[in-house]
View 1: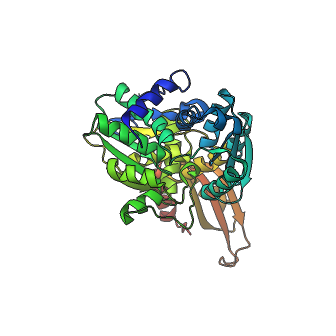
View 2: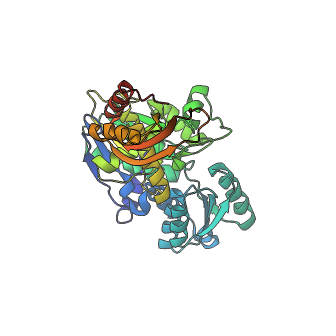
View 3: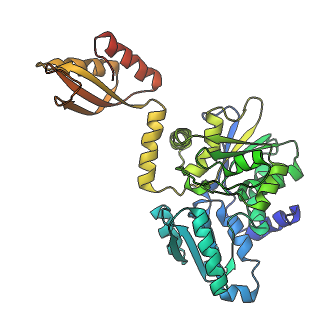
Length: 395
């Protein structure tokens, strides 16, 4: 069973192992908002805290047999590094679709990686099977009191760094992080609100709390792979029901926009799961007015190719990257005149596609599709109105 003493003991054990990550103001992301940057933790995620606290508790016999874990990437790296530091062999079952960067990083810390078709829950079943077959000790990524205690040290740090904090917003996957943070905070400052955030494509805790019991989703689909969990743990569910004030959800576009905003305004890189808390604050899912709020950015291990797609999605959501399609007369100078309207508006042309072969156009017209950089959604809307007023009908 989890206790405050366990979390405080974990904090002492993690001294010199885990970084005390910064807590910085982020006024451009929200009034009175601060960021707890666990994306700057060793291995790029908060997961090191719980992983080390679990592995240090193994008996000599358990340590000799080795440890096994299942993870989409961040818990994997935390277990691999902790096991290597303590001289314990580790095996990690990861979903086959986990970002390549996370898979390679896990191998780089010395773990044996087993890729399993499916999502986290499929990897978990394989890890359980191997555990029984080989005699490994299973290190659950969230449904374990020692892991939760390690994650709870973040709650202690936040209270030490910002004693006047009134609200903490935390991403939720299986619930280990928010369970530890909420338990620590509610025992030391019960008036502080703790709000959880899930992706709309993986709302397992959100729906479970409404159902009154842990429930399993048939599928999960989100760019926030670190919180793509089909079913919360029994222990984490119970802790969330008792100590978490509210759970909200955010869309894929909102997560992408938050990643982009963190890069531009805070000069920091967050993965989808890590940026979910910021997305909730940016898009009004969490009330900020009159509350000193801390957003926990839980990780920064995002694959470079994925990041590129997310940035594009974020720019589109913010109205800074738009695609327009219209017709122009098939006469010399027609395309140039239309492009001059775009140039005069201050938009930047990324690409132009010009085609006569369209079944919906007549023989005297061409179809033009443009991808443009604009300042914001208002700029994009003003340009479309200007083009329409000049007879260019948007499709």
